[in-house]
Image (tube, rainbow, N blue to C red; front, top):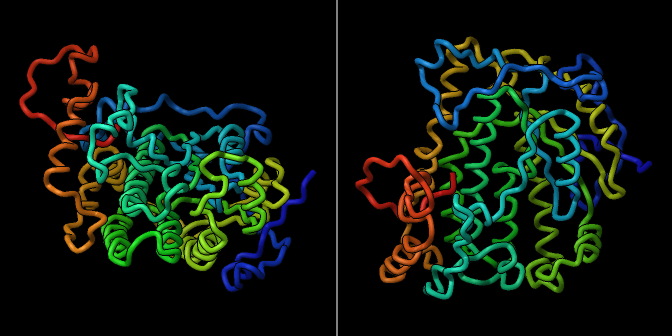
Length: 399
């Protein structure tokens, strides 16, 4: 069995990344609030989920459907984070199974380019001007100084933001906890690393920071962050072992880029999460044991904070109406809040699309299967029951 070490939080937050030491400092056992199937010996019982995706949720619904009635000890938000190839996905899936939570995979550009009908918009690239063609992580690994890199990272931030909003909506409407493989909170780590390596301009970075200032106050912090720590050398070994074609000899995945990611995680991200969420940090060089991690989670008393503490403050609401207001926001207002990403900046060339190119993009995208109208309104795709439709829409975020 591989040894798993819990790194001392104070030490990791106040030390240089290259000088991290192993520690066996454990959280004091007080009261168990999250429980795994192994400990309980049975499945979690909860009321049927509320059909919020089809019915929405408003104040009238709140009179008859109380948010906290579906909550149990596992109604929590957990984020698994760490550098590239750390093993986040495997751990997140295992924990989701053991804790009976919803697993939410890491955001990727498929979530943007593949529409609701399964059509991959990247097939249209040949018809588009170069400035409007698709760009994803494979393209970034091959050409990290491409002029679409900044727009790619902003789109990733956009996807992660919407994904996190959906995660909170799921918890509030079903009572089921969620486990995310990375999240919107750590997205800035990659933008900062790109900027330090010269992959994005100072102007593009400032636009990203302005967007982040606009939207991050709309996200409540998770209950728990689990960070898997591995060194840059170990990252390189694992990248070589998995041998993905776009990662092999990539000009993007340099020592400088990987070291910058490590630095941003340890000097900024973890410090920003500590005052607001519980934090578990593991040395994952030799991987670890799901049972050990589960037991550590079960030891955490999420109710030990007072009303004056900042940690988990956003999850300590006074009454059902405050829970209803939070639920209404996350169920109904995502599209409105996503409009905060629209920052009018005309001084960053790589984020500007020429009028003719934008017109061509609209024409080509609207010609794709299922893109003339919003999902559910396209008769050529088999949608039925359509009475009227008066306005054509451009490319819309996948619902």
